[in-house]
Length: 153
Ligand code: IDP
Ligand code: MG
Image 1 (spheres, rainbow, N blue to C red):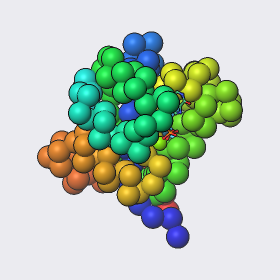
Image 2 (tube, rainbow, N blue to C red):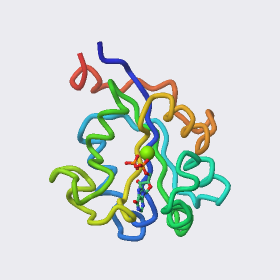
Image 3 (tube, rainbow, N blue to C red):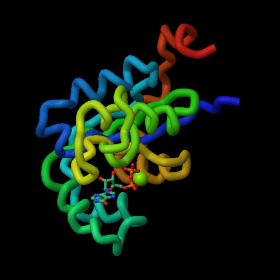
């Protein structure tokens, strides 16, 4: 049974610098996911270390923290049935070299260290990541879209 979930998606600094905010947001909107939170922010080193804690000690970790803190990101909370998997599928494989055409990374990126977008990998990660980037008061919890019945049964 499909479950309504929330996921944390971020347009990373390369996406913001390259003027791809609209292009990326558009892909999630068109797919049918509901945006319940969105903001532009500069990620602090502390936030980056919390968010990417699982990668601490890996060879790419320092570069990753420096990349994600180098320019603003756009953080989003997206909601929908199976939102976590759905968003990961819209984003594509971690290494853009292996990302399918039609995915964000497969269409717009070429390298793993500049892969444009982040998406939570599980409902538990989503919960944790949403908590890093958003206060509950910044999320719209009391909105039913009028188009909802045309997107999901
Ligand atoms: P994901 O973003 O698809 O979930 P993860 O394995 O969780 O992929 O890695 C987090 C991020 O760390 C990637 O999106 C990418 O920006 C960066 N990263 C992962 N592996 C490498 C690497 O080998 N070199 C450079 N950056 C990497
Ligand atoms: Mg990940």
